[in-house]
Length: 174
Image (cartoon, rainbow, N blue to C red):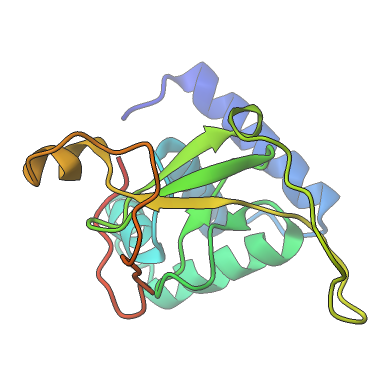
């Protein structure tokens, strides 16, 4: 997807402001990575971001992408979707929302917070645990995978189908 110059300028101004607020130096490499991330649909992996930024900066390394993303995560500029899917996935949507995770292709789709009843913790949390944010993951089959298996995507949870995601290869999000 190509952005027209007014959108690109607004994105770069927004990035400079985020860096200033979070005391990060504005560098060309950070800017390119941020722009690629914001232009990409879904929840890209560092490898997907790397493939995209290499078109603009062929000398950039995958290590630079990882280090930059970790700087962005630490500063709160982006979020990690879920640390237990086996591969880092980045979410630039900082609004409260939840995720639909396909157990087949591992795609991740955002759903608005108001599509889910409020989450209420029942019982006590372990001593000393402080909640910083919450996110709900709903696991099932995306429309494409459900169609390939001969059925429509179910709205009710399936029993007995668990996938840790560890070591799984992630398909691009849809």
